Amino acid sequence: MKTAKASELDRIMDEGEESILDYADLSTLRKPNKERQRSLSIQLPEWLVETLDREASRMGVSRQAILKVWLVERADSMRATE
Figure 1: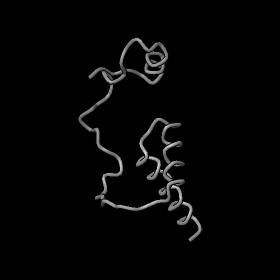
Figure 2: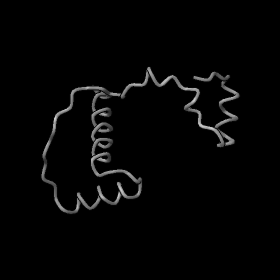
Figure 3: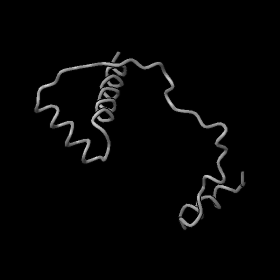
């Protein structure tokens, strides 16, 4: 693993000619939110699925990703008012 100061990493990223992964300690890499997950099956009205699909397409992500983001945002806002 290579080492560099933050200013050097900024330059490397700006130039885009070298990968900054050479400077990262990948042995400490871990998946964020490593919580136990459960599967959920829901039925939604067609208009809502179309809305999800449009937003997913706009953002370049999956329908599931949009659902997760929206649900987390709502849960966070509910927790903030408790």
